[in-house]
Image 1 (cartoon, helix red, strand yellow):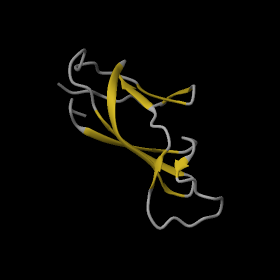
Image 2 (cartoon, helix red, strand yellow):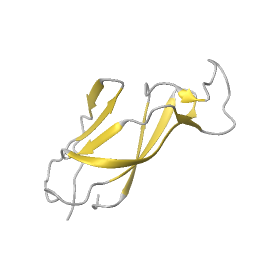
Image 3 (cartoon, rainbow, N blue to C red):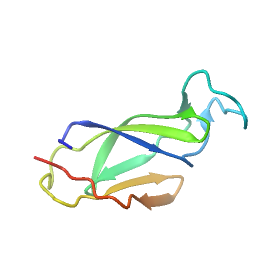
Image 4 (cartoon, helix red, strand yellow):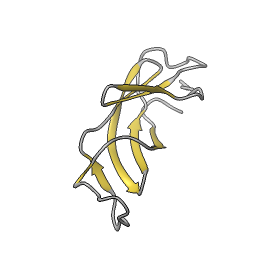
Length: 97
C-alpha cells in the first residue's frame, strides 16, 4: 500500500453500532460504529474515515495509510485498538514509498 492510500478492513467484534441493531435484524443500510477504533500501520497512526456494521456480524473500517515515518519498512504491522482490546493482524502490511 502507498502512504495516503485508503485501506478497507473487515472484521467482527468492534462493538455497538449507532443506532443499535437488535440481534437477528436484517440490515437495509450500514450502521456507523458508536466509537471508531484507533488504527496504526507500522507504528504510525492511520486516519479512520469510516467504521460501521455492514451486515450482521461484519464490520468495515476504512483507514488512510499514514504518510511519513518509516514508509519503506518491508514488514509493517497493522494494529487495531478498540474498547481496550488490542489485536495484531497475523499478516504483514507492506508500506511502499
